[in-house]
Length: 276
Image (cartoon, rainbow, N blue to C red; front, side, top):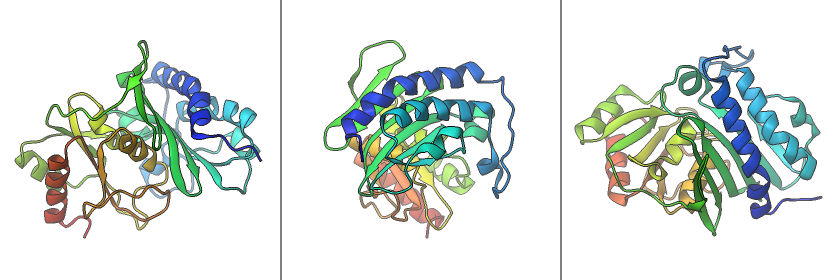
């Protein structure tokens, strides 16, 4: 069975990621929500033609090159059924992270993400913030790189400027107020944007809270892996390193350029009791 190396994975999907970002941008404001059935919340139900088009843009070249990987994709598009159902290599795809709030309602950045899991651990990842024109790639143990729609690829690293904290949609008001009381500017964003927040200029940290039993989803961990590869402080509820695998339960994700901001944000979370 052919399994991509982390480097091959990034090289293969970097061009279609840009294409998917261009598709998403072109369709902004032009597509309607066509809710999926069988989902319990409006967030999970949200679906547009942009989601399916972006997903197929990523999956078609992946299926042609590496059909033996397993796939964990957000949407049920045609290419999904061509991949293997067994094996250690897993590719995780979220064609538009934040469809309802960030894409349709324009409440903060949305993201397009793909990650490679080998033996249950994230080894590579790519993410685009189409509205911001930002593209990031990472390979575990090697580093992360950032580029714009036009411009050279360069090493990505945490940017310790600004006091803005990106928080996930649904963050309790008490947490947002407490962050503002600490002198932070609070803005909303999709989970993927939250994970790479300290790699974005003017944003010092990101905070994500998942209220379900499993915590941050397998798709939501792609951006955490990218931020970690870039050298950001990526921690869980108790300040421990956020899990590198795709399934260990973790309800809180904090990604920060500086350790002091990570600690301050975790203090706010602990005092609020939201993840107790």
